[in-house]
Image (cartoon, rainbow, N blue to C red; front, side, top):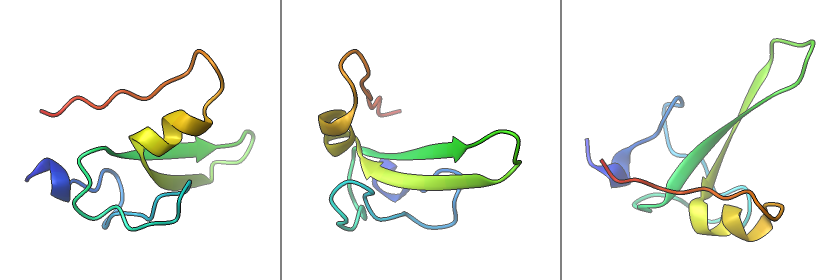
Length: 67
């Protein structure tokens, strides 16, 4: 599977949660898993890593390593 086709733990690529654009073909696609105790519910968010880095607090960053 090509990096541009990778979907992560979901069956298809999610739209970028920052810009709202399609992530199809994006080499910097990342999936975030959000949970909140005490619930066992899980929410997945897709994002372009560059957009995500633009909104993270100082000291936090996302780095994409192509395998």
